Amino acid sequence: MIRIAALAFFALALSLAAPASAQITVVPPDQQRAAIAHAGAAVAAGQRITAILMPLMENPEMAAARTPEQLLDVLTRMLPQLAAGRQELRAIGQELSALPTLAGPGVHPEIAMVDNAVANMIRVASLADGVLADHAELADALRKRDYERVEVLVQSLVKASIVIMESQAVSMRGQLPLTGSDSSQYAILSGMACFYEGAAAFQRGAYGMVSPAEAATQRSAAQQCIEDQIETGRRNLAIEAATPPPHPTLRPMHSQITQVMGAFLDHLVSAADLMADARISIMAGWSQERLFEVYNPRVLEFQLGLQPLQRRILEVNQTQGR
Image 1 (cartoon, rainbow, N blue to C red):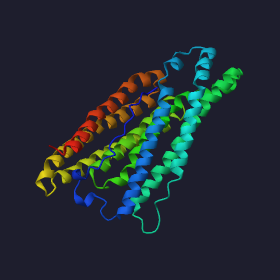
Image 2 (cartoon, one colour):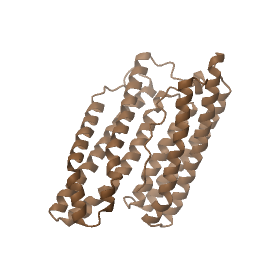
Image 3 (cartoon, rainbow, N blue to C red):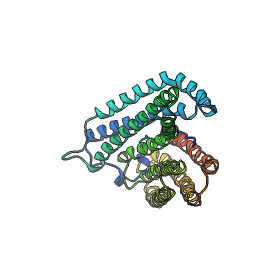
């Protein structure tokens, strides 16, 4: 199973990295505040969902279970945790559902994009709830020795990582309306969303949830998306770098942020390469074991490579480039 380094990513105001034309300046302040609040709620929900599912993915006792009896013992002890997780997931869904719709007459189209992020995160929370429900039902099936039902439910053991990947993709797209669509940050977030969508498609293909051809097609689409966003991002970044803020004290921060944006775009190249290689491997008929043996480390390496870049963004924002 692919390990996941859960990332909050930007969630920062990086206005200095983009020219004024790239900012959402025509949107009324009340719409901006609502969009920021709703997008923040969606991103926070994704982090909560990840925190609920990660213990399932990294439970050493479950991984070590070799007999139905051992697996039943582990699942039985996890039942309170599963129930608590389902309760929180329902709360997440209710909290997001209670957010008023932003789209409507006189509302900027980009603001309305936040509604999609909220709706998609509600869907992800429901998928996560299904994973927990299936784990609890698996315990019941094992207890009753209903091995036909066990065979069906055991597939859910692998769905947690897919749901987390989807949650990360939704979080990336949820932040898009908070950035200018002609900014390098917008391109980076879009490319990251495509990476997580492609990673989810890879797992579905490796686990046999979709055909190798379908998984390969989705990986190819993700690769093309990432490459397109790298090209767009570099083009926008060149404009941003050539458009420093008029106030001299802000220029060091602007210069440092544009450098980090360039590093993000360079790092995305490895994500596109990963998608291309994995598509070829899936079409070549590699076994599940070999796919994960080769690509688990590469996915984790890519994600871990993002962390110093994120820390650098935080440092620049905190020090104002000083």
